[in-house]
Image (cartoon, rainbow, N blue to C red; front, side, top):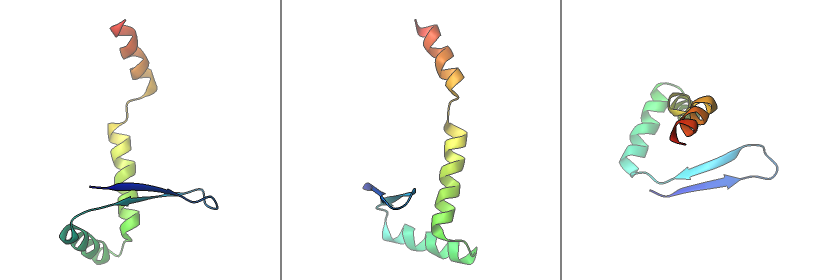
Length: 69
């Protein structure tokens, strides 16, 4: 898989370009259309949920570093 970050000077947003299998892409777009949701919106929702689920609060990171010392 290949990932490219694209940053636009005139916009505050950045782009993310990834390579996926053609069949997976087509199925994903088909499901998005059936739900009347843009694919980009679905990906952003997934990313936000993933970050919220997997993120470790700064406090926990600080505490774990203290225990290692």
